[in-house]
Image 1 (cartoon, rainbow, N blue to C red):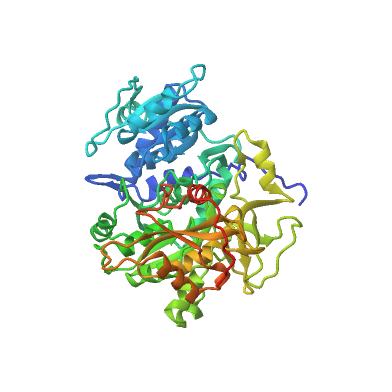
Image 2 (cartoon, rainbow, N blue to C red):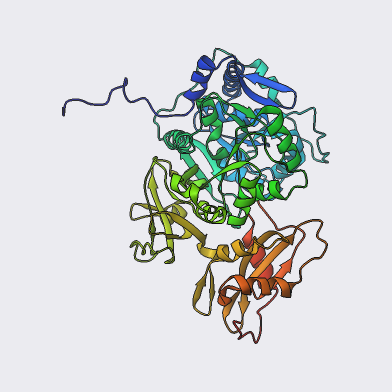
Length: 553
């Protein structure tokens, strides 16, 4: 057997791009993309992506070039997930809610050659370009038009190379897409979502993207031809790999420009939506919407991005959603830990089921290993559900590294593991539960305090809409919990700070009780619904230390 070696017949590079070729053959006359009054079939989507890739090559885009896109969940955004790598280029999806300065930094850091710009983001991107240093190369622009949107005016002007549809029309439908030289060739460049103040460029390979895509379909048990509603931004970790995944199963992509709970319920009913994804904030918005309604048929909803409060899960499932919960990072390209559900848990009370489902779970089949370790020694912590440690991962979907940042790359790759920076516990049954980001753990009087645990109790208060807990300096304890909350609309009587603190005292250990409660109309969030705790930490710090606060009771 030692003479048997890999050959070109059995070792072509793994890539998810071939899923679109297959979809065009198997599901050619089935709907691929729906957006307002526009509908494409899989054969049309396949042809359009080839034409666009052909046009990219004709204007000078070459293998390894970075092509950026600033757009919401519109058909062009979906097609670019195939068309850009079809041209041999690296796809860089940029968060539409970033400020011009940050976008300028991303374009410069990634050395983007071309940027597809949605009409609603035109002014933002023009400002970003004018912030680039004079000696840096500016990317060319292509406009994604939309008749339903009135573009924002701008005093800045720049020539656009073409429109998106113009490039599609000019392209060759017989174009043979450029396959990667090796499966380790970079395919996507994503920047971390902004819950910290210094996002980094995450590079994923064709192989890693193939792995997470297939793994995500299997773990969520996505059937053939689902109706998938795009409530999760595709620019967030490439929609957790589902742009390629929905092509693999010949599903229908229902695109929506922005999240609106009433619109979402309408699209679910109109198109018979079966699947959707979203951060816990999406679940919260659905359940708190005055327009929410019981679903006629179950809709499978996969949530990740932040630990979801059990109370929010309970309310969401009461509407008829079947919630799956997982854990992933931009650095893994999608979800690679999921709360694998056991049939015997269905016999438990609803509150206990919600508590179990709030745990992140076990590694998916595509991951080699997962553990919770002591950050200094690297040794596994006790599986007792209470000993904190850092979550580490090992598997084929982990990123290649951070672009132009060897120091950050080497810092997170240690001892053969990827160190996530997330703090969690391992339960006796082998299920992971995330407790915090390492920087969000509050150390009060020598006690390590999980902000997530405090938030989960706050979410059970009937008046609270959103909650986030951060550290506030304290002269005596060093740090104490400071809770930022927004309240639900339409309350007859709004709770006071004292009442919320008393509620916490009745429902959690006294050392965990927030010593300060700050009311806000809305908490600052990223476009994917993650609350920006670094913003809140700065606010709490500016409030100054609490004084003479020796009481824990």
